[in-house]
Length: 498
Image (cartoon, rainbow, N blue to C red):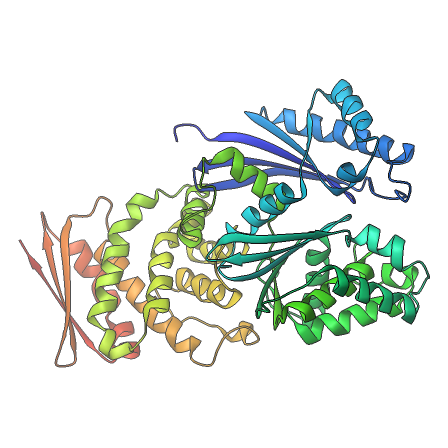
């Protein structure tokens, strides 16, 4: 792609109207350059099945703001999609006409299945979801989807979004026990799950807000919401706590968004009931959803589902930080050779090899911020970047590898709540292999034509075929010798082959 295209999508939801502006880095990666939200509450007060004048006024003002912000980026396209509130409203056409007159934007009302598919695309292209269930809860509706082999198998949509659930079932402040029972009973009557599955992913603003509350409760060491796992017990306790509180009490709770204080408890109760229905052991939070799904449809021809989320995400993060991913491939090749040669020593498997190769592609991203602190910046970018398809544990290991690739020993102690007991050793082994691979490919372009590694009688022997003098590479490899001996218990010998 010669010049990255800028694209904009606007989601006209029942609770909020949200803008996403992104730059397409390739056909499989994008970076967000701007976003905006407006709590228009379009679905509020729709008992009669029509948008109130207040809702229309708020919606028009929101769209006017979104159009101004979006057009400032000169996007190649702007897609505007309406969901449950507009689907249900008898006067939706009035809003659409007035919106077009005011902004020039054409709002397209998504069918329930189209909305679900866009939400599915946003999640499946940013997570490791392969089989299980996906819930997408907004202000108006809840979509429960069955996913099989990364394909959308079935969709069931019901009117159990945060606004509608609260207005119809939870009218008291705080909610009465009979109201809560009525809401749970209605959810159970609406959604019939014939094949329970332990895997459940969730997307939507309410899911993200609940995740922030859980993160605060745990004193979680990562700031990432995307990929956070909420256990069944945690969700049940949180739903009960929120439901017992008044609106004012929820508003004062750390982590509760001011715009959700009066509706968040309804979402929590609905999600808790869905977890029970699906047999989910935990809920994995997806930070992407409908807007990103719309973006993927603008960016990609069918199939819009990415074939490899992890690789696409790593390449996107590298490209967004000025790294040519093709230049990293010689390091990737060297790292793979070292891993295979020492497999009988470290006894690690395919998951660890995958992490090593992804780290090899990302190890150079920090130098474009500050060369002299490149390792620390690379670690920060992995932690905070738009990295998808990895668990939080894997993100911690990846970050440690790019931080400690060239020297030192990875320190995972701040992340004990996330990592496993053997992860410190795993990270140390992979960091040494990555550091040695980077030493072999010290220069760009590299004079090394081929690298062969073999363990013989307690020695890691490297044979480098070259097209020139390798003194610089030998010097860097010598600097890795102590690490190889300390971690792998191998001496290191290297010779060149002309």
